[in-house]
Image (cartoon, rainbow, N blue to C red; front, side, top):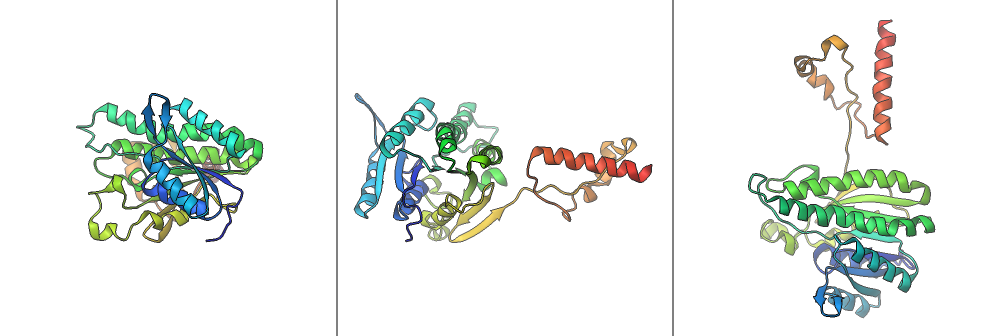
Length: 305
């Protein structure tokens, strides 16, 4: 592999197994010094690295790479801040953050305990926030940073029995959009990955014949692209089985309705025009929507004047 990440320091969360393991190894093979984060185990002396994380580090170092195992519960801000502080003490910088850690607690919404809803939000949303918040001042000071959030088709399109997971993964999109805008002046680029892979977490959910085609290693090339020096920003990329897609959120051109034509029945009558995909486009910010709406209103006023 190329050594395009030579000199870069990357933190990969949930990197003891599955997708995180693959991402960590791919980054290390491309020259990055990798912090392999995994939940860790509680001991009398405190928090110790998990066997899984140590195994990943062993594989990386055996292949000539540089990696360290760092335990932390992503949902615990103090543990995350301590991990980032140790990384800075060891390597002096953090260039790349891959937020990958996650779990599932699937159940229909009617039967779901709200404790399971909160647990998923804590890991996927607050875990990503905790790490992004902890590396943000470092990346701003460096005027360089690459942050990747892991979203999911379950959040972007929906999936039965995953209200908690879907809500958490949809939140990644909003977080990406805002951090992209706030990080631009310091060359902090922020993207989302929507992966499909057969891992221990998805065992039993994906048929065996399909799972054989969806190894985690087929997703990691998208990670390398989305955290590279020439990476885009504010992109959602789907990846799995060697297939790569770009997922867009678009708004239609829309229809202006006069004040006397805004009843539900009026909207229903104009629904085809409201939803007409011709002229649909992504928006750079929420203010762009406001400006667009104002322009349509002024255009209508001019026409009727």
